[in-house]
Amino acid sequence: MGSLQRPLRGGCQCGRNSYVIDIPQGTNDRAQVLFHTDAQHRVPLATPLAAMIRVPLSWYRSTTHAFFPDERHSMIHRVFETTSVNPSKRYFCGFCGTPLSYWTERPHTEADYIHLTLASLCGEDLRDLEDLGLIPETQETEEQPAIPTTTTTVVGRETRGVPWFDSMIDGTRLGNLRRSQVVDHSSKDRSIRVEWEIVEWTDADAGNTAAPAMAEDVNMATSNSGKRKLGERDDADADAAV
Image 1 (tube, rainbow, N blue to C red):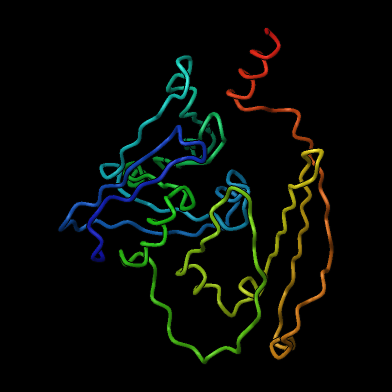
Image 2 (image 1 turned 90 degrees about the horizontal axis):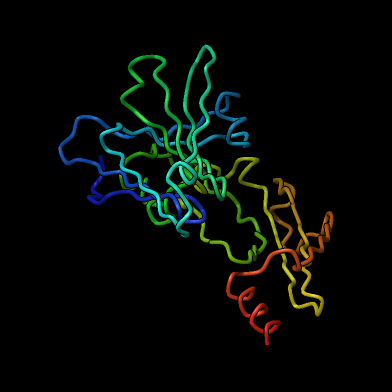
């Protein structure tokens, strides 16, 4: 294991589920970062590349946080259990839907381990996986020509990348895909307009420094009248009562 001597933290998007991975010092066991492309993991996570970290159950601790008095543990930490040839349990948040973990006892040696979705780790801890020695070192390759990138602007989401993952896909077709998102939410009717640009760069484009033309614009207008924050609702009710 690497030099990082602190627990790894993770949880769901809404914050109701959280977990900690305590890595003992001097242990002979080790965590593993795994990438799955088989349907058993690809379909439940709705992604062509399912990334997980496999750790001993004894390292894993989880808890739930109720935001309202009527929220029970079983409502927050939900489980989907399969009884097929390969029985397993998949845990997810019952409110925001974030996939959290996968457990199976087939083969029996796997019963002492749990697989946690890699993306559910906190951003800082996700980036520290390389310091833990969990990411294989990549061999140095010939220097690739500089490829222009586009800017990503996302409202309310973390935009900082994961350096070790970026280095893994650098120079590949996946790494050459660039995404640009422009969000305009200043319209008077409180709608949101989103423009997407997806461009694939090839070797022939490496010497072209001009900004690529937009392949396709997708404009989505969403009304903001369906949901309100609890405080806004209380204010509106109070005004109506006056």
